[in-house]
Image (cartoon, rainbow, N blue to C red; front, side, top):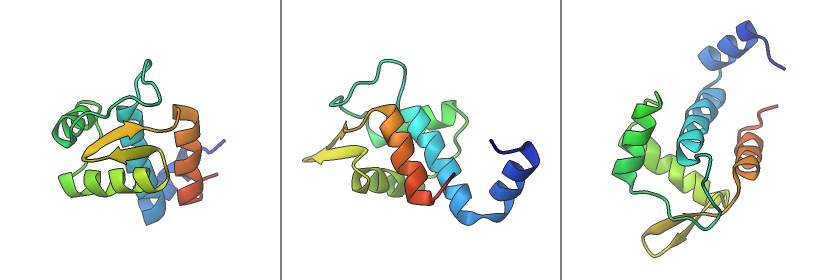
Length: 103
């Protein structure tokens, strides 16, 4: 468990933690209560709008980089130009935390 002050300090001072926090927001926007493994991911423009609606302020390039990382972590899989969910939410969270070395 992380105290509020430690969390705030990490966000303000640790670029890796900042990126994890941003990408975690995208991950939360990508998954909803009924998202299934194998489900097609919405378009980049729609996902960008979903992120903004959820309070995740991310640029087009940041989102594109984030989705590339998700593909490399096998959270998503590519088939042609389409992206599909490849992991359940719990596994996706674990992969992202491990990548950024978040406790």
